[in-house]
Picture 1 (cartoon, one colour):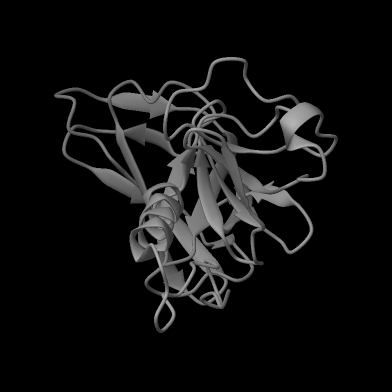
Picture 2 (cartoon, rainbow, N blue to C red):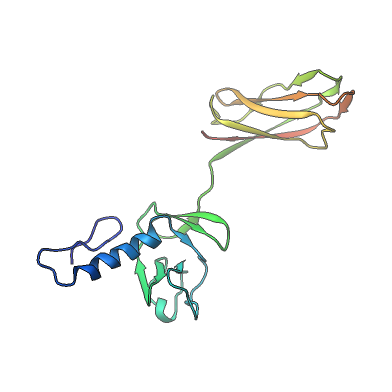
Amino acid sequence: MPTTPNLALAYLVTSQAQKEVTHNAALNDLDYLAQLPVIDCTLNTPPASPNMGDTYIVASSPTGAWSGYANCVAAYYSGWIFKTPLAGWKAWARNSNKLLYYTGSAWSPLAAPYLDGTMTWNPGTLSNGSGATSSTVTVTGAALGDFARVAAPYDLQGVIATAYVNAANSAVVRLQNQTGGSVTLASGTWRVRVTKA
């Protein structure tokens, strides 16, 4: 039977008997593949009492009803049905709270691309209402418009710290004291993380 190229949903064919069977099977496929939340991605053995619609990513050494379906998406609809993923498929694994993608041979965590840089900085004393801006931090690959965060090496005692990309491959940290009093900050290693926009 001919199928769609990406999700392998069965097409209805001319003069087909019991078209509702093919159509309903395709609806079930869409039901579990469209957003693809999976219960677990580490199991090799199917659960003993699955609920209708339960969906899993089969681990690398499957047994029982899952034998031969390593890395496939398995869904339970009055029996197990399987889909072989294509490179680029994404799934949310509820057991690990991670977004996964299929590389073409395995499921891997999908992480936001980020870039890190560090600097040693001694901000010194900041009076109430004043601020200080660091020298530049080299963050190779950073570009204007990217998101930036800063991690201080100690308690900031209420001083506000922000970071931003100020040029290609460069970021700065800005401190602002609105505490109502003077705050002295020591020297330390500051970290800046840039997330690509």
